[in-house]
Length: 473
Image 1: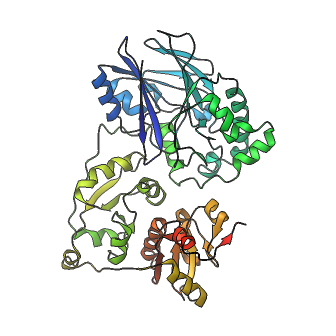
Image 2: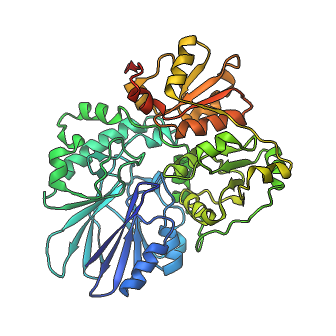
Image 3: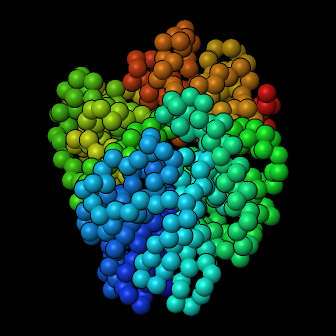
């Protein structure tokens, strides 16, 4: 048997390539939309991808199952649990098998047994794996978004991201009963989850890529509960804000995402087009570092620095209903397009290279900037009561500690509150370290607000400097 682990650190998403070396057949579990790594792995090992499966209809990335079916002819083995609302809408075009609790299927000598594990979503299933060539008992279980290392899947996404009222508490009760069943599994089983630390599909995921059932029974907080109501309350408390794009991912993955057949090509555009597009209301994302953007940028552009959180904030802030554009270095554009396609942002209609500032001015572009200040400088402004402080962190961070006199508006919702903000004093934005507040500063400037200050280093440097904070609520 061959088992290979693939991890997208920008989405904190894990997928698995499992092959039977005796027959040369392989399956991919929870494939990402970029299927090239799996196809390359199959070629390297002299194997054929004969099937693709997923534990549930994903909300945080576009599934690559359909892409694999198109590219390799793989059969799709997908959940038939959860009721009519959770049926896939594109399977008639492909070879497929619908799976129920207790279903068994083979890939070569490898036996997969299906366990219905609702809670995160109603249709969620997990797969135990037995290599029948040398064993009559399973060696591990693919748990998707059911059980993670140190955590379990959140049950509130359908309610918060897809506006399905009342589903959070129902899902939490389902999760409790799924975990009771999980506790009956043998301790020796390896546990292969669908996400790691940084995913918004849970609230306290561990960074270790795998675990064992026995270890999770001992140390996973969710497996220590024997009172259902107490568990439900604990599970629902403190879940992070779900990114806005999660609702779109659910719909795309259910109905069938567009097949890409490789990395999309992105058109280079002359800098002279930039003002015209901005005047038409186009969203233009400047991907430079916050310091470069703060010193000089084209008014109306939004700064989302290209880094580990780029895809997440792009999903929050870019519309799926109209084309968008990037300001980015040429050698990075292809990877950026690939990253954005992983969450279905396929309407990237072109990019502009960031020339030197003289080049921008020669092209007739006006430039804008905003101030950056240290925590000590901001503290002086707060004491003089001549600034308005906005904390753009998550709710849980805000509840733990915060700056005196700050107002909390989580970054993903900032644009919705622009009209409420004062114009009679400068607005200071801060987060944990300074990146999210830089994005927020660009959003406010693009909305027409002047007098923006970004607190560099965020509350991390504020507390390191010994400045006072208000403790949790």
